[in-house]
Image 1 (tube, rainbow over the protein chains, first blue to last red):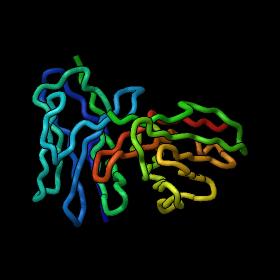
Image 2: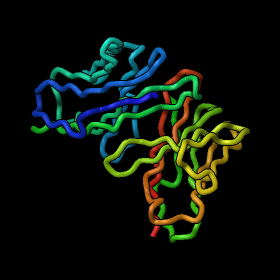
Image 3: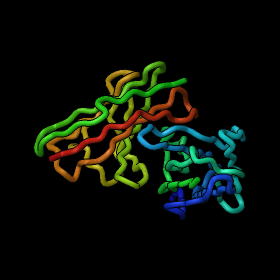
Length: 110
Length: 115
């Protein structure tokens, strides 16, 4: 069965510290994964898409098929990075619906 | 960029009444829209896939007679919560993609409170 797991509900770091938000997936096909971010009182926004291999707001994520992981990383966290982060797997064979992980709340302290 | 508009942003209703939530794709056509539900501090749970011109596909455990979905045009899908109860209070979010295999864009969500 398809599943996305984010093991940490809350991750708290100090400004300037490195950040890694973990995401593991279970999918029998070739996965396409995303990271979405939800700032306080705002809509869910696309942060990263693994196939584009780009860096947004200093965040990067590499798909590791061997470990079935898609961890989100940033070398130096900023206070404005505080938000909810969701890892998601898209099922194009089911109309493009997204399966979300449980979400990780990132809190960056000054 | 692609914009998805959801209305209303919040609504309070009494038990037993019905509430309609609209989801519009403002600058693109969406043959498929998705309705999610989000409880506080929890993830988004897919409720149903809304297909233009055909019946919606509901996820397991979601009552189709309680959560009526209509996707009458390529830019509008509606979710009607019928005979609402307090346990239906939640955050409802719709999403749509402009093209096949393109990322989903999300509406701002609707906060429903049933008293």
